[in-house]
Amino acid sequence: MALRRPSTRSSLLAAVLLAPLAATAATAPAAPPSTPAPALLTDGSAVWTDRVQILSGPDSALKRLHAPDVALRIVTPDDSEALTPKGLALLFSGNEPDYFRRNHLAGSIVEGQASPAITLMPNVAKALVGGYFRYAPDAVPKQASTLRFSADTWALVHQGNTRKDPLYRLNHSSTIQQRRADGSLAEIISCNDSDDRATLGAWQADDYARLKSAAQKITMKCIDKLIKRIPAMYPRPLAAEDLSAYAGGAVPPARVRVFADFGRTTTLFTDASCRTDYRDRIDVKYNNAGDKGLLGIPSTEALRSKENQRFSTLSYQEYEVPGGKPLIFEAAFDPKSGLYCKGTLSGQFVAKPGQDYEVEFEVADKMCRLHIRQVHTDGSVTPQQARPTPTICEGNRAPVRIEPRQDMQVLLFTPGKLQIQDATQNSAPQQLSDDGSANAALQQVLQQASSTPGTRLCIVTPGSTYSSPMRDALWNWVLESPQALPSLWLEAAAVTPSHSAAAGAQVDLATAMTHCKAIPIKEFAAY
Figure 1 (cartoon, rainbow, N blue to C red):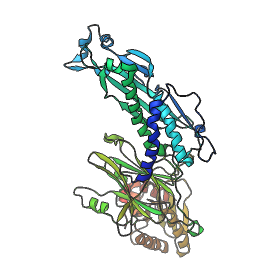
Figure 2 (spheres, rainbow, N blue to C red; figure 1 turned 30 degrees about the vertical axis):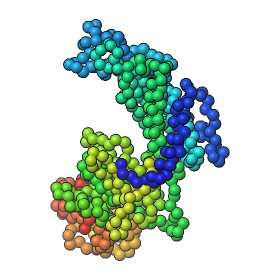
Figure 3 (cartoon, helix red, strand yellow; figure 1 turned 60 degrees about the vertical axis):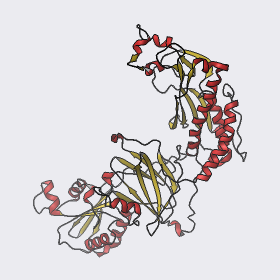
Figure 4 (cartoon, rainbow, N blue to C red; figure 1 turned 180 degrees about the horizontal axis):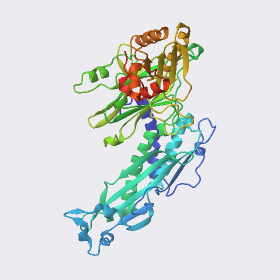
């Protein structure tokens, strides 16, 4: 993922937090304290433990063949023989042992050797989270949440087809789950390790010294994943853009170009504090992006490169977004593509008023990258700094729109009258006199429509030679701003046959609406 973030600050935070964690892991008690000591913030105003509870226990959310390993489970050759009356030999196909069935045998439990997800990880996490909130006291959430360490597998399983001193592999899997106050899942981190092998005697020597050392390494590896996600799980307030210079609150919008490709979706959330608290959501796909809705963002190297690709249909979209407000971009393969990216491609930043940006979901060298760039007037670009998208929302606004580019205004000209209807709403149509007296009202309608990126106009006139003050004003407005409102002009004669109306019959608004809704979006082009 190629989101540009301030590397110095991130590495400094990791260094500050990791330094005491190794010592904590080595000296952690056998079980986490039942009542955690209060962790005061630097300003003494609150304790983070009132808002973030750290728990541990068995992972009971998934169906499995054996109970979750809260304590060490050992599977020996004797346990494997029990799989079949004919003994161990039937567990093999050629020279390959049936590891899957073997790994899920009940075996024997060593109660004194708990899974690191039960004891070690929660204690280290308390030091980590406490250190993070001392470093960033403004990141303490307003709402309660839980970090739960769930143990799944913690087992020594014999390898190979021999009874004489076989090797035992240490299998470990666990998860760190961030859950909201209502118990719903916000984030999950998976930890899996199954590489360490030794004889059972080596594992058990010196009171399981090798096992304890492996548990510490596994803990540090898993906690390192948590460190990378902590700023998204408990983000600091996003720095707001200073808008005081804009008189009367008239803040210029920003503009964004989003590239699209087959089997991929790039999602734009506007005025977004997190994934579930936003104003608009726009899913840009290959089949709803194209040469419509272009706002004039300067051409960049990325755009020129795509234009020069052979056997490729250029597909992208440009949108106006609120200036000075946070944007969130996410990118992923479509579920039906059968492809996926490791991890989440997502980032958040505040769009500067009047500034242009472009977003590209790139797949190269078997890696997924989400590029967010600031576009300058000369077409040069600067990588845009973005932070990890917050996983938990503090707000609860309801989103306004879900699907992009579905808004449409139907304008029907009949002699002496212009009717305007929003095709996506059930509101009453607006009726204007088809003369110069209603020009101001028409301009207001068009300005409101163009404020929603992607709104298109379906215009029906009595014929190709029809002329009127309102029709001519509309035609001139579309010619002056061809990309703001993609338009399609139709003659009444082209509308009525599809509805079996008598030749020459006047088209009513309902008929025009039905006809316009059936026209594919790609037919609406900029003139």
